[in-house]
View 1: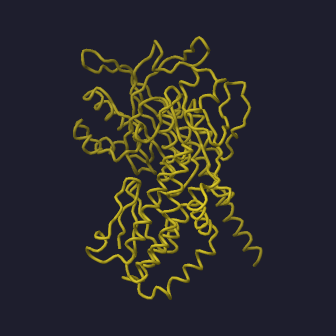
View 2: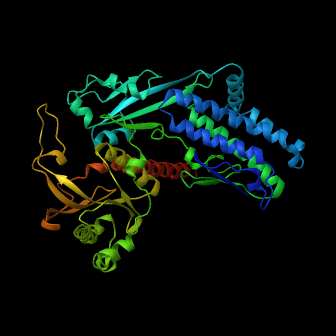
View 3: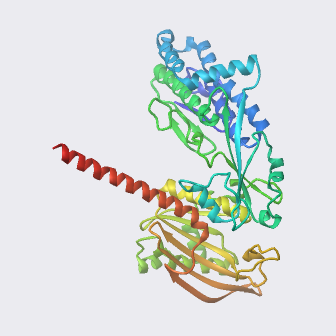
Length: 481
């Protein structure tokens, strides 16, 4: 039975929605479960805003705790409830996080707020290499002293510091440096009564247990499996014991990047998916080819691609047609595995800070897709290195000798690169192309790929460790014989 959708802005299902076809055996418990999911996302959205996080945390705990309250009030709707429910009670009593949920709700209702605290670290992201460093197995800790090569890049701030006060901890850093940077603020909220457990993960676990409880009531009553879906991600999970996420939705899996908020320094605005719109949907490649009268099939038949590198020539031909017709070219990213194209997506990158976040999300997309190749197509500015009066590097887009370039760049997980570019000018509404440049495994590296290289290196190390384990097991089995 489908229990509806979840997410912060998702409508909560009412009883009539459940009774159109097959009556829901636990309609009110369902509502409380969806409310818990809604407030969980409220906690996530306000994770870097201490006061708002506390309010959403209180609401989430109460909503989740109320699931079992209303389930027991609806016991008449579930046949054999008194014989079935005690086993679930024992399971939940033996679960430390579920026990914490009960105690926390009692404290919130009868005494006051939980005694929560957080660690808050500000990391200055000034280049794609800073993004890559954050993904390394052993990143530099936030207390790293100021390096000789530049300003200190990490700060720890008091736990209840609001975002509006972050800049006061960065006064020692040159303003010109900050204006070209983004701030990545990673928090970790902990309850004193639950040391060692991050609160979003703890709440997600409780939601998962309760979802499996309600799902078991469904299956017991009408024999149907219950599916829970998130409107935020489109992810769904069959809520039964042994499911991949333990009853949680995929959107409730918490990692360090989920707990990190990105800001622009110059105005304090958020850098998020709404502004970067990275991987915001499939790019219609076939329609694009028809519009620009490019026969990609014919081009590919000449190259017979085996890796991402072999897509450079045909995509370059297509990109020039797009630029000639539209007078601009979007930032396109193609993920490949071998000769197969896994995904073609479009990104709108508003500024330098948005590009830093995009680089991180690209690395994550490569990891999730299992891609071993990336092709990027974009317009860009190029210039000779230029320093300002304070010795800071001026971005090419602001350099006086800047040149517009159309580039197609490909890189594979084994470190091979290939790129083709052409300078162009705009004259009387037309695009005039200049000299084309081609290079392979030499010269120019695409810095936006730095975080992706870390992902590939980490994945390669994991495969090496797995292979070594397999060899050791074979040798061990041989010695036993």
